[in-house]
Length: 482
Image (cartoon, rainbow, N blue to C red; front, top):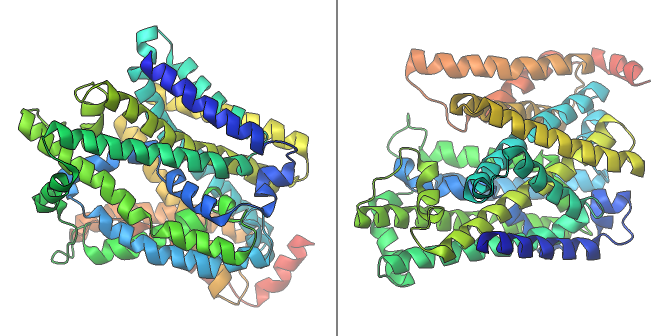
């Protein structure tokens, strides 16, 4: 009952923000927040929005297998955010875009535009619903099972709550609710760290020293080029992960495009770009402390690192306060990423696919339809209930970003035109070829791809577009558009 009361109070605060921000809302408010968002609020809220419920659970457990080497990727995020801020944002603001994929129509053609939009819809609905499914499972096991509430009702209720506080104000509401949820997320994280340190009779200074001296706190790997944890692999891949999964993702860019001016949007992007290193350092430090606590108490570590934090927090081993904090933290992380995903999906469908951005009735219906599809995928993942299949789906999501990287890179770096009609076939073939290479190369050479697989996928798309490029396609594409 303590957890339920806490969650009700949490959602009451979200609805209060929604009522204020949703007054006199129009389609322009829903899609672009009337381009009046304070850049510092966008920056602060984006930190929480970029941390999903899966991240909240998984990152602390990374220390059991790879130490703190994930921070190498986080360092790569910083130049990635600068690339987005000073190369992509000026392009989006100059063209006054609402959805970023409309750039592809003006540069390449309608088929490229639709291909980019459909790839976003596919990857976002799969990835976001899968991440939200994990959180629904935790809430189900944590609260709902004790009351005999079926999983269908849990998932439907959680998605309905998102719809309730976003259906009017849309992205304008999210700029403010994400800031509130970021406060909840990091407050809960810091208090859990303090509670774990207290359980081992340490103050915060002693806990910091203990983490720094632990062998699991190793960050840099320069000596093994074959390892997926090699610094340069992680650093370069981190930069491109940001370019693709932030700069080329409507979900991540929509809030940034609500800032009043390009300069404010650039300040927002650079500010929260620096925040990810300390944020993930906190999650990994918590993981080290939890391993130390398990050793001190003689508790065996779980086989899966994702179960490390829930093993202590969800079972009440650290007290009721940590149970409540864990619930608030994971719900804040989950909702701040899922609500923006549903809003971005609605925006992309209405503008990119239906071509009716000004139709308010369509937007309302599309928002409900997207929520229903979201629930359907969550229930599908529940029915599959196979870790191997779910991992395959998550891997599929990572492959779908490669064609977007190739499309935008070709559009911005190459002056020539490519055959617009060939774009969908190239975008489908590239991930398939990439998948084959990923399976063959380790067998033939022993080399294992890490995050750099994204670069390979983008390069294959780029090469395919280049093969069909030339001056001869210019007239063909113009005739198709006419």
